Image (cartoon, rainbow, N blue to C red; front, side, top):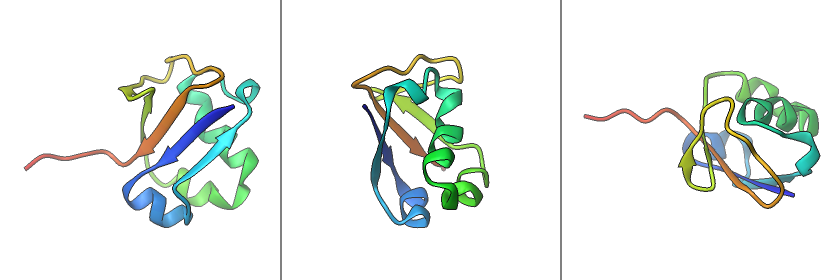
Length: 82
């Protein structure tokens, strides 16, 4: 299983702070949003509303970053500095 954590406004919009996905549904970070929508179709509008940042095992991920069984993945909004 892959543990998926949601942060900031994403957590509020989805109404939950975490979920799990079967490891065989996600191979790379780019697969994450489509896999989440396949599991929870009602999340489509929120997940497609903006490009979310992804981290894998607490390291920022690129679309080609591998995801495997036992990994912790987080989605959060882009961060701006001031």
